Structures are given as structure tokens and as C-alpha cells.
Image 1: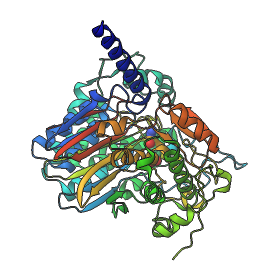
Image 2: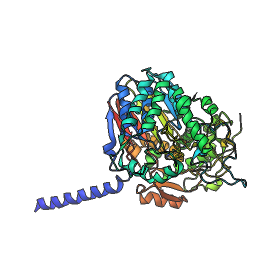
Image 3: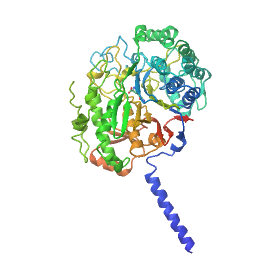
Image 4: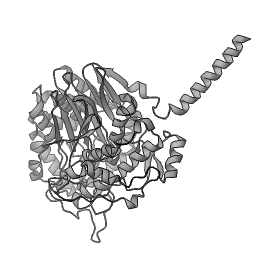
Amino acid sequence: MIQTTNWKYAQLVSLVVILFCTLSCRQAVPAKVSQKFKAVDQAGIVSAHPEATEIGLEILKAGGNAIDASIAVQFALAVCYPNAGNIGGGGFLLYRDQAGNNYSLDYREKAPAKSYETMYLDSSGNIIDGLSTQGVMAVGVPGTVDGMYAAFERFSALKDWKALVMPAVELARRGFPLTEQQAKNINSRKKTFQTVNPDYTSPFTVNRTYKKGDLFVQTDLANTMEQIAKHGRAGFYKGQVAQQLLAQMQHDKGIISQEDLDNYKSVWRDPIQFKYKNLDIYSMGPPSSGGILLAQMFQAIEPFPIKSWGFHDSRTMHLMIEAEKRAYADRATHMGDADFYPVPVAQLMDANYVRQRMSDFNMERATAPKTVTAGNVHETEETTHYCVVDKDGNAVSVTTTLNGSYGSKLLVKGAGFLLNNEMDDFSSKVGAPNMYGLVGAEANKIEPNKRMLSSMSPTIVERDGELYIVVGTPGGSTIITSVFQTILNIVEFDQRADEAVAACRFHHQWKPTAVYHEDKCLSAETMTKLNEMGHELKKRSPIGRVEAIVLKNGKLELGADPRGDDHANGY
Ligand code: DON
């Protein structure tokens, strides 16, 4: 009898525990998380695709450093993750060497010399639908191959360029098995590929419905990348590949010229650096807005006790949303390519300025976005991210993109690679939203040879002078808020790398006015309280695909986002 009572009592207790856990724990950490968790001792890579991660790992095992592995991963992604991996696009690379020096490399695309401010407007000054997003006029001068070569020349340990590119050539030639997501993705865009590339039969345009496991063979791309393997930078910007690209321009009446290809130069820039509590955070400066916005948002929330408020507590979220709102308002007005426009970087990141921006922050009420405008500063949404840490502690954080999924959808006939649609990141018209709903003005207007403003934010965090976190994500305008939240998940809410990248995300960018959040992840209580404060909440599709490596207790925690086919490995 006693036993039965105890048993019933135990059943009741476990039911309550299970119920409690399903209600409270489920929210933060999706079930798939544990499958993606790995902790390794010496070196690790996290990227959007298993083939790319494994190729990079082989380079590390062969004595390459983090830069060597990053170059190999970039080229591999151009093959096995063609919606964002690329040789026809651009990106940003952040590098912290084992001695603690930080560098950033800007290999962002540039506007062609023949571009001009109103090139996407009709005679009445209205935006011509689709011109900056699809087809030949959307394309910026690609920077990826120049960027990879610049990284190789400065920091390679292997000193063997061919060895870094050939694994991708071989992968393109033998083909790789499509994942389910990829097969669906390519099938769903078949018609667009065929419309944009009417006279080119390629694996993207061929009349075939792909399924999981089908080999995706890209012979033209293999030949193109072999030119790059043999001739380095010149294998892309000159010779056969350049001629194919220019022939495509001529055929489709595009404006990129040989002069544009000759003039393209990636640039080493000083990373943005700022402090949050005992952390030193490094991220990308202009032409990215990411580093500056992160600096603003972290400084804006620093005085508040979010750790004790808790993860996804309505007070924590309200504060973060308000910080995001003000930062994105500044982005729209003050940011563009600093080589062309005097972006007031130091002032935007100044602690007093950020404090003054938050002075109308009300703990109880959302500030109406209409009443938030850019601060008064005086002069005096497919991309991909990967992280690499090598055995010596060199770390690389790279975000690279064609902009939209498969960029402009325009393939270079015979050369097998996709061209970006990065021109849409310029502000085509003051106040008119681009494909991520971002607005801009004078600072980000189109000018020949200028780089378009970006949100890509490859980031590295140090704690007490030691490497701590390597992180980044795709997601267009949501990139910056996703990086912001992931770092806070780790440093304030004690989440493991895999939990931090998997956790539910939300996003606010001033305009549009709503706060977007992923499905089934905020508690009813948090949502009600946020609504009561005046926030307009809207559910949306998954936000970003964050990759992170966290150095903790002598191990490297590898976090690959469970939203995709992302893959972490190391040794
Ligand atoms: O540079 C930028 O901010 C955009 N071109 C990034 C695009 C992107 O992340 C798309 N991914 N989902």
C-alpha cells in the first residue's frame, strides 16, 4: 500500500517535472541541438555544408593554418553551397592571429565604373522592379578571388595556392550528393534559372527534378576553378574566365568591363573594436554597418542587469529591441562606404553618444519608431558564414555572399558560376526599402567603384585578452541582431555554443516597425508583456544560420546552426 502511494507520488512528481520542462526548457533549445554539438581539443571548423567543413579540415591536418583552411572552405562552398558560397560575389574576413593581432579583409563587390546614382529608376523616378535584384544589371564587380588571393599572400602557412583550390575543383568535377534542402531549393528555382539563362544548359537550368542524394556535377565550374588554381588572381580577372564573363555582359547588355576587373582590389582595414564588460569585441567596419551597430547595441544595454532578468524575459527583449531600433535608424542615415562618404565611425560608437541615444528609453513602453530618427552626428536577408580555429589558436571568421539566394541567378555561360546581385544593397532611391526592407540615403547612394553598404558581421570576441568566441551568420539585415543575440546567449545566459546558435531569435530594424520573431519560441507571458509595452510582434521564417566556435575550459565548442545542413568538425 505504502509502495503504491509512493509510486503514485513519484509519478505525479515526474509528470510535473516533465510538464515544467516541456513548457520552460523547450523554448530555448530545439531538440536537434545535441546532434550538432561537438567539442574538440585543438582545431575546428563550422560551415554551412559538410563537404566544405571536411575540405577545410584536411588542409588543417596537412599543416595549413586557419587562413589556408578558410581559403579552401570559401572555394569549396562555391561548389557545394551555390546559393551563397561563391567566386562571383564577395565577403569579409576577420582574422585574429595567435599573438592576438586582429585584421579584417574587405573583398566586398564594387559598383562598376559605368554605374550611376539613378540607374534603377525609370523616367518618373520610380524604382524599376527587379532590376537591382535579378539579371545582369544587379551584378557588382566580384571580389572573392582577389580577396582569397590577398589573404593567401599575406598569411598562408602552406604557401601552396593550388593545394587550397584543387579540392574544390575535384569536388565540382566528381559532384557531391545534394542534401534534401538543397534539392528542393534548386528545384524550386528552376524556372527562374531557365528564364535568366535561356541559352545555357547547366546543372541549374537542366530539366531535372533533383532529389536528396543526387550527384550535383559542375564540370564548367571545375574548369573555371582550375584556371584560378593555376593562375591565382589572374585565373579569374584575366584570360579565359574574364573573357567568358565579359561575353556574358555583352550578350545581356551589362556594364562590367575588363577595366573593372583589372581595378578590383580587396582592402585590409582596421577592424571595429569595442568593449562590453570584460570582453573585447572585434567586427567589420565600413562598408559593413555590422561592427558599428554591434558597438552601439552592446553599449546601449551594458548598464542593465539582463543576466538577472533572464533569457527572453520581456524586460531583456524590450531593452534589446529598443537598442536595435536606435542603431538601425543610424544605419539608414549615416552609413555607407567610408572610402566615398565620411562615415562618422568614432562618434557613432562613442559611449556618451550611445547613452544620449538611449536617454528616452522607457522601461515600460516601446518608443514609437516614428519618434526615433537617426542621431544628430556632426563631422569632427542568402549569405553564408564559417568559422575556423587552428591548433595554434589562429582564428578566422568569414561571411561571404552573392546577396540573394543564388545572387542575380545569372550564370556565366561556359564558366558555370553564379553572379551576385549585390547592387541591391545600395540605396537605389532615398527612403525606398531594398530586398531586406532596409532604407538608406546619401551615404549609401550608387557611385562608380563604390562598395554597397553591408550588414555582414564576422565577429571575434576576446575575454581577458584570450580568444573566446568566433561567430557570424547570414540573414541580410538580421545578421547584426543575430550576432548580438548569440554573443549574449553565451556570455550572459551561459548557453553552450550549440544552444546559443540554435536558440530562438528576434529582430527589429527600426523600419519596418514590427518586431519579428521565429515561430514557437517565445513564451506566451513574454509575448503578452511585449504587446502591452506597445511592441508589434510578427512571426516569421527562421532567422539566420549562425555558426560559432567558443573556447571554454580548454576545449573548442563547435556550434553549427540546426536550421540548415550546417556541419562542425575538428580534432
Ligand atoms: O551584405 C549584406 O548585408 C547582404 N548582401 C547580405 C545578404 C544576406 O545575408 C542574405 N542571407 N540570407
